[in-house]
Length: 497
Image 1: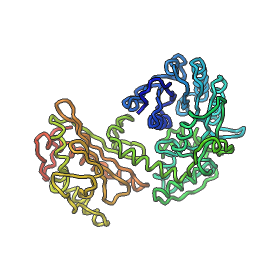
Image 2: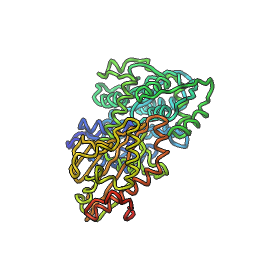
Image 3: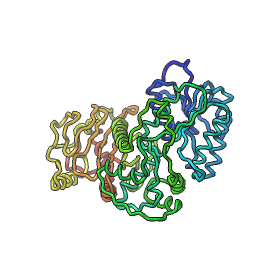
Image 4: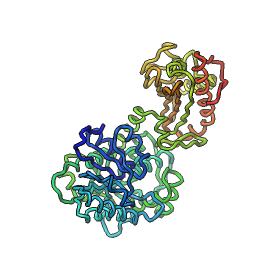
């Protein structure tokens, strides 16, 4: 939470709705720093606002909107860039930096902390040159600037990490152009956030530029190998001598979540070597950079922890739920998220969920669950023979058919982790919340595919999943309103959710 001490000047984060901005906001909250988040649309920071963080609207391309955001601020983070825009991103970044710097100077801001990009030489890509120009423009205002220049950022949700993940997970055989072998110096998001927060306490009032990176240089090709090793995947690469940034960008647009234009700009940057040549950051900050392998492992652990601590359905909704024939994407995970309202109390609505599995069954197509269990046993899995220890009560850690209870909050939440044989990891969550004189039941199936076969498994059986999960929720609602479980033999949907 932010500090209740209203006398402390707030620290402004411009670009707070971006990937680094969100992680930085959370870390400053943890350190009880008074935070003010600026975003073009306040709604994009609704989760931070719900935690008590001050959120203001401001657009660096509109100088008049920046005054209220910078009022009373002594230090500000500038994390804005326009690479994803459809216009002239370099010109937008130039105007934005000049506007922000001028208003910051007028407001009496004594320091700006800026995240830029590594790269040296006269042939920098347009993206890298723009990132470094922004740092120069901010400093030209007279406000002292601490500029961190970084290469690839490794963290769950970062652009570079998601590129590596998508390529390795989806392509057993990868065609690798020469840019895959250009050296970079990836930095873990934890190290990056540590540098940014430490800059707030840095003594002195002069502008400085710090080059920051991980423990050692490595290429995108090395990152792909490291990610594959962490996930236990075997991947083969075929080098090709020529593949232009334009063609590479279009190719990335087909096989990864990246837009083609972003992929092209990113590849143009990758073609420049981005390694640390000045070790000033190691001397001035008490931070020991981790290696890329450790950063990848940390990114995957963070995802698991974030997913374990969050409510998945709300996470899907917060990014704009998009229904497709194959569910909803959230990061690398695939989800089937549904909800329905019932006219009974939350306690009564949760009762059929508490009894799920074992002799009660799964409220829809129990014969399919039996077949799935038999197939699991054939390949050495646990099957469904374990049943459940008690027909009414549950506890975290208990076996439940071929699931295990991962989290249990009576009358509110049940989260199950699959223990059947799968080319990935699966969880099933039920959450019940009061809603006026009734309750809302949220049901979310989450699948984290491993490799090509993991994706193939999900897409091949999704029509069955859609039928099963839809009817399951409908019958759970029906059982809740009747006040008793639906018999195992019933697969009728009852009312439509």
